[in-house]
Image (cartoon, rainbow, N blue to C red):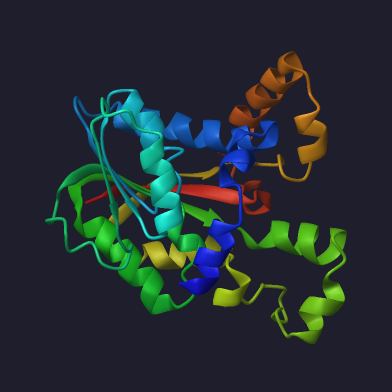
Length: 260
């Protein structure tokens, strides 16, 4: 866990999501959380890997019943500092690989909005999703976020001029899939990787959404937009974020699954 702790202890994750380009991912994710939470009269929501509480705290303040599980103590402390005691939220330190604190079929909506970024073996990925499926009621929904491979190739390898570095360290496959390990912090996926994981579970995909679309490619331009132009950008983004021909180019995706 040391690489992960070092990363989040030194990173201002709040500022990223609060920047105008970061709001695209946040607002899109919240849009779909609300869409699926609205299918239940009083949904019980679990967020695994809640980070600093950007989603969990916001949902709790909206009146939802939320349980937030976070691995990194630094993040959990920030999350708790945002609460005033009026919220219906339980926040605990825990690991996505072991949700034994929760009985089977406990939640209507289970969210993994970060753990799959930081799991590197097939076994760990399967274990994390298996635990999330286990604690979700049949007919409930599982929302899983992923970091995508192609934006990293385009933005990091080429635009940021790291081709020599990643070639010398053997971090690319012959078909341009980034290899990941804990010191790289993030695991990267293609849409076929996500579908292969899903095939191991009793779930049906509802939607696969590009949560930030082109926002990271244009982040400087988007951050300089006036509010009217940014609103129009969001209109465009929401109109295209479910287009499957664009999914793999988004930095982040959200897989929405119904548990059988």
